[in-house]
Length: 429
Image 1 (cartoon, rainbow, N blue to C red):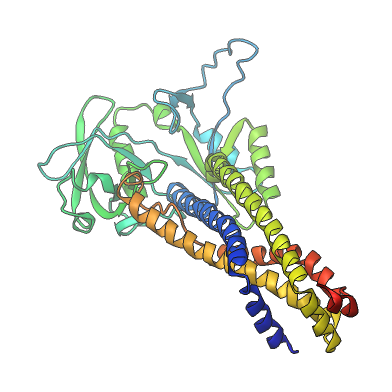
Image 2: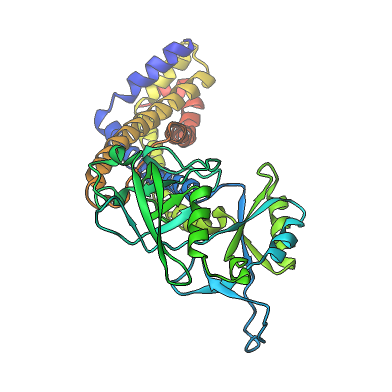
């Protein structure tokens, strides 16, 4: 009996007792189905987080602020040289100690820092298209290396000398555009009030429409030229010291460096009294929570698969008992113990393959249906999120893992069959 005959015979034998095999396959199906869905949820959310991370910052950038003073030992002594400015992030009204040109020079001298740029904070009064309704707006700077999740158009060009902006998709209807494509190429106006109370207008060309994300979803994204124009306009009347005050700075480092290099860079900044935060630091805790939840859900699915493994053991042990005389006859005709072992092992693997393949296929159908149902209901406010996404490598891993578990589960009955004495087996009633 060659390998092909063994496989064909194993498949045929697996289907002898259809009810018993069906129940065992059903138990495996439940585990594989659950694993497919939980794995898909983890993949979908992590892909969404990765997209969001790319839209809020670059991988080779550290945002640097001055470290907050330690207040655990009482009030902090007043420093006349320190100036508080509104924080770029955090709760409304929060402030940080401002960075100055002296700080930027000190940061630039840290080993591992490739460049330092102050992050200009601009606060326009409103945004408006033509004579339409004016709306409040927040503006963030486009950092080279970011990847906006675009609904239409392109990202602002950092090297361009003209004012360019990407608007959030939630402003498309409000600003009077029929759709995202219609907004691209149009001109909008920002109203800005300077320190002296004079309101001015700054125009910019819409080059793209960005989908909403988890962070900064409603911010307009300006290129460097527009950011500088808005900053200069709102800074009219400001003292030189006021203009030389920044909430944070953007530091670029070598993206090919190791985690140890990045940790060393952060430590050097900390020694100088600065705090460095990467995008991964910001989003990492949230991602860890998601991974933890998916891990717990996967654990339940693995428990279901282990229970199914005992079902395979029981199914094959009963099969060995029922086919004792058949095993004896096969041995009497010259079939070795190794091939008997292989025959029953293949039956276990086939049952595992059948249950896992059906479970994965059903999980994909259920996940696809859930995506279609939730996209316009619960997840309507999170465009771009595919809750259940399928990674072919992960699905193949599920099927192969279940087949491996089935093989291990079938080892005991297969060994028992392989060790049967042919004479005693033929006498078995």
